[in-house]
Picture 1 (tube, rainbow, N blue to C red):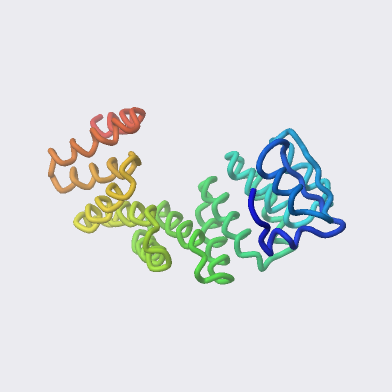
Picture 2 (picture 1 turned 90 degrees about the vertical axis):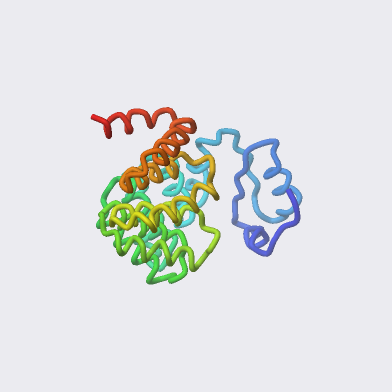
Length: 238
């Protein structure tokens, strides 16, 4: 609940349907602030998006939200198809290109992911999530120098962007620049101390540097946070 912003009030007009689930702060907010829009209370969270699409006649916003939901549900193929429909109607929508890139990335279609992220950046040069996605796509393609450049761009745009340090650490590690890898991964583990992947990659970096005792400390921390990493580490020893 709270006061309506200008953006909220843009939805309060005849012909607009606002759909909320019952009993929560969103319903209270809608009833307090929307005087002209039709308010529909819909009690099935999994079906709300379908109801939005039905009420909007399949307009771009509904499709965009559906694509994002499909991605969140780990349905990348469905997200790709939906977001492509969005872009057929609104090709200048940078965020749709970004989420299309993320869907391709989830499916390991790295060239398509890089193309979608690049298009998002062309439309919105400071699109943080697009730069971060592009860095990850370059990293997974083993194009380490470009991954580093994009990771550094993310930090220039938002110095507090913690995940960029992990991307940089992994990219430096892949490139064989162990000193910079350790520096980036130490920064990441300081800022995200409960994230096991940082300790795992830090352990790999120390191991390559033949600092076995430091590597074992990092691996132990990673295993404490995520015991399932034992399978990955066992494969290293095989």
